[in-house]
Length: 112
Image (cartoon, rainbow, N blue to C red; front, side, top):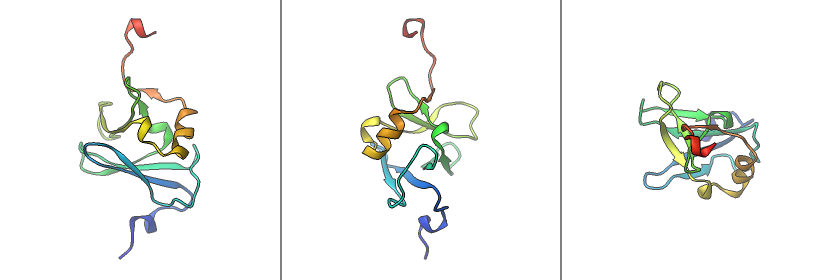
């Protein structure tokens, strides 16, 4: 039986989000160094019961600082999975901290 990694393109740094109470992220091909261009994150979706793949540009920033993963099939931008910056591995913290993310919340006038 093949593993998930056997089906994924080796040109990308593949990661998978899992967990229920606390999100966990795991590298599927840790030998490839992640970059902003090659990073791909697989996450489960409770909206459509599928798995989706997020590129860095697909991830949104929540007002509490978490990174949100949204269902591309859902018209709403409600997140279906999120991860705290504290739970990112060091190699991903560098990439995420140097990226500008679209906000997944409305700013109030006091926030501007």
